[in-house]
Image (cartoon, rainbow over all chains, first blue to last red; front, side, top):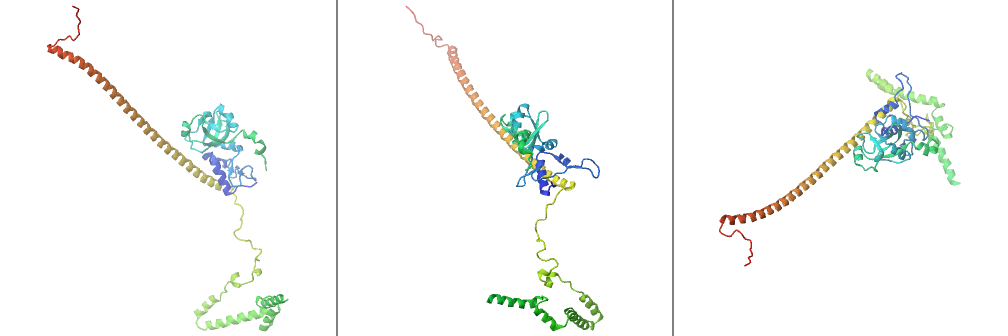
Length: 162
Length: 206
């Protein structure tokens, strides 16, 4: 296990900044105001914890959801009838969207919540908010990237250390 | 074997210049100068310096001071000395090659992480802003086009209505004129009173 290098840190932050706002800096903020206060750090071990592909790209797993949900910038709330299709790995269609963050651009990372504010996963918007308004009910508004269903579906590989 | 012999002879000559101490030729050369090699070197140097000092010092006092400055020993670099590469302080093989991998530079302090974070954030914000701007512009263009299309449709509709109205009016006018014509003709005759007003054909049975 080792700290991240400069480029790795940059890649990581760039990825996280897709989903989060300026509150991301609270991630690395010290826990209290003392001079030698404890703080959270990023660590990498082989390809785990932070998964770097061979091209140096960074892939976020569903395990990063609690962190993203805390600092999310854009959000999508899905209705009760859309929860199951999303948790089984489907994209979000317009008919299932309960609420949207306003002024959300196209291809922007969003965190997906159920109507009672439980984070379900995250994805990327297919249309901007304005365009999505004109979309027909079966049109995809958000592409799925990770959902909580992966904890069951990818149980074997999600926490494997190889 | 001829070629091997020639090589050995060449190497013997080479030892003369290379300054390898144990070789026969080098020892011979030294013995010609004086008995011990350290002593002979010293004597040669001292002779040279004294002769220079006398020549220059005899001119003026200033010259002597200059001479002192000049006397300062020049510091030679290793290259200038021409020492064989294997005889250096750090032998050739031991020296590390330049420009190789220097190892990873880890970022673990808060300040540098914050700077990287702020850089990334600024970049992302710029991207989002430009996306939004683009989306807004596109929306404006779309709205303008929509408004234009609506206007055109309205115009067409109004034109159609106008023509319809015109046609209706024409028809009305024509029928009114016909009616008027019929009424007017009778009246004229009535007014004149010359002709028989009743145009009805009558049939009489005798």
